[in-house]
Every structure is written in C-alpha cells, then in structure tokens.
Length: 120
Image (cartoon, rainbow, N blue to C red; front, side, top):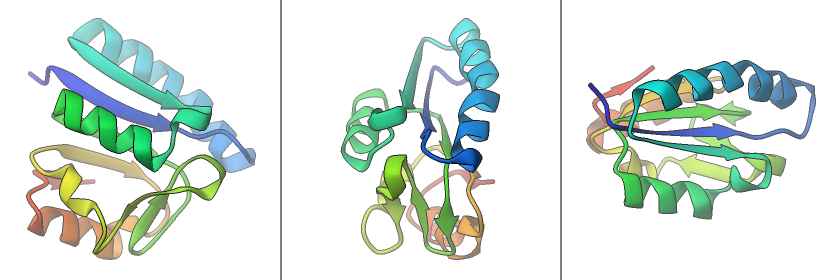
C-alpha cells in the first residue's frame, strides 16, 4: 500500500476550479489511508513546491490536475509543473494520474522511460 501522495489542485479558471473541487474528495480519502499527503492547491500548485514535495516525500502516487499539452502539465496560473526534457525524471518510482489534456501523448511515455511506474 502506498505511504505518500502528492496532489496538485490549481484554481484560476472554470476548468481548474472544477478539478480543484472534485479532487477535494480524493485528498480527504487519501488522508485517511496514507501516512503523508501533500495537497498543493492554489499558489502552492507550482513547479518549485511540486519538486520539493516529491523530493521530500518520495510519493508512490502523484496526482496532477490542470491544463496541459502533449509534453507538459500546468499548475496555478499556467506555471509549467512538468515538461519533457526538463524535469519528467522527478516522476521516477511513482504512479502518476494526470487529469491534463493530451499529456499522456508525449509526457507519459517520456516519464515511463525516466522510471515512472505508470502514467495514467
């Protein structure tokens, strides 16, 4: 069973506000089952904080919410959280669930090549 999870929940437009609210149930459930849950919401859904929490917690599960493209996922105010060729390696040893348009096209396989266990 996983011990830690990191979840991003940006909130700055209709799409991210919906994802933010929907994932509150995910955060609450995770907190009842896991030792550590980092809920990176609003301004904390940025690259610096994401990388810091992943490095500190070494989460088995990473849930990324936000806008995206084939090679990236965005956080609060369109801050680039993960981008192919820059930092996809931080997903190593994690199961990644991404609710982000098109990111499984290029970022998903690139993350797997860098050691992610799964990219959904």
